[in-house]
Structure formats: structure tokens, C-alpha cells
Image 1 (cartoon, protein in one colour):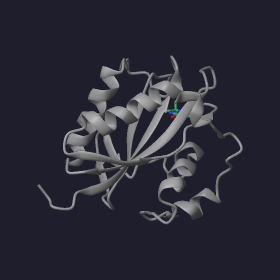
Image 2 (cartoon, protein in one colour; image 1 turned 30 degrees about the vertical axis):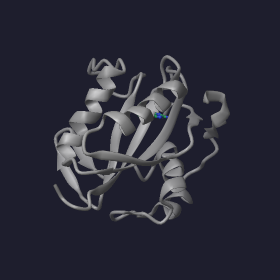
Image 3 (cartoon, helix red, strand yellow; image 1 turned 90 degrees about the vertical axis):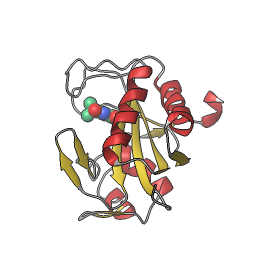
Image 4 (cartoon, rainbow, N blue to C red; image 1 turned 60 degrees about the vertical axis):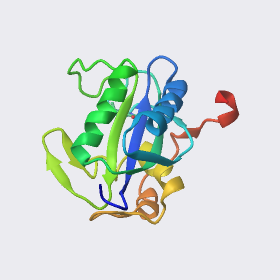
Length: 170
Ligand code: ROI
């Protein structure tokens, strides 16, 4: 095992059931159920309209920062296991409503382009629901070839994002 581990960022999204509760439950599972991994921090939760097909409920999104000793492919497998445990069905529908979505946004400074695993996540620089939660955790983080998270936040609007008060879910 590498002594230091790798800092990675996970995008969390849900828009079926009780999305805020699912996002919180997913964070608890990241902290508890991921082998060789520590949850370092998570952002606030943000309600926001769907990107893509509009005939689906609003999403709740957040970003988590983890320190992991898992290789990227193993981390992906573990995240998919949590999605499945929490009721996600992979029916092949792209961009459809889901109980839980866990995406690896960044894995250290690594770039990976394999079927089913692209890091940095290809949507990271355009998605308000990724960039603003990420800015809470790592404003000066460099997205490879794109600039810092703070710089990218200046290129997208946060008008659709509403932070959810935490006490509503205590
Ligand atoms: N839209 C929002 N707002 N949040 C998401 O997490 C999200 N995830 C998706 C698509 C369908 C692209 N739209 C989204 O996969």
C-alpha cells in the first residue's frame, strides 16, 4: 500500500425517492463502507434542475473529498457497489432519473481514458452542480488543462443551485 494515499473527489447526485437523504446516506457509506479509504470532507447539498432531459425531478448534488489507497478501477467498482446497495438499477438509460449516482471527478492529478472510466470526469468544467460544491472543498485545485476550480466557477452560473439547510436533515 502506498504510504500517502491519493486525494480523490466524488460527485454525488440523486433525483428519485428522498434525494437529500440518499446523498447523506451515500456520504455515510463512503465514510464507512469503502475499503482502504477515508472520507475527508463533503460539501453542502444543493438542489438544482436536471441537466439534460427535463422530464425528470430536480436533483440534489454534493461533492465528497476522500483519501484512498484503492486503484481507480477498484474505487469505481466499490462506488458502483454502493449505488447498487442503495437501489440503483442500471437499465442502460443514459441521462435518466436515478436513486444515486457516484462519479469519480478527480483522482489525484491522474488522467485516465478507458471504457467506463474517464478521469477527470468529462463534464467537470461545465457543470454548476459539480463546480460550486467542489469550490467549497478545494477552490485552488487545478483541473488538468482547464484552470482552477475558482476560475471555472466564474465561467458558469450558480443561479440554478439552492443550498439545502443542513438542520433539515439532522
Ligand atoms: N443533472 C443534475 N442537475 N445533476 C445530476 O447529478 C445529473 N446527473 C446526470 C444528468 C442526467 C446528466 N443530469 C444531471 O447524469
